[in-house]
Image (cartoon, rainbow, N blue to C red):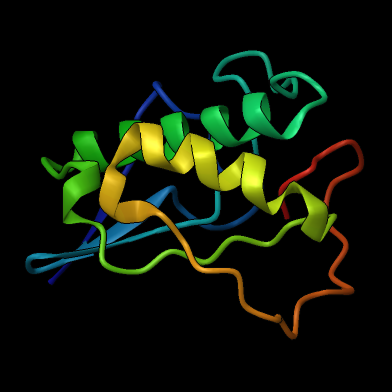
Length: 120
């Protein structure tokens, strides 16, 4: 049975989807822009601040469902500029050392979402 997960500690979903869905012991968290909860403002201009906010949002959603960052098994990150990879990856390590990512070419390279966001 599917359970909708929602928390005020992360930005509300923008559009007709939920922050997360839980099915059994698995949770699927929707992509998190680097928006500060309650303000809908971007968390700074730099990759470190924006990564930290996106991960804080994801962490809040996970915790609302009783999960932790250490439970994460797959992450997809879309960067506006691949030269931001090292800065983004460093912040990832603050949240969980096992979340350190390996740089890989992406079919999403030309993806466009939100202006001012360094994360896609």
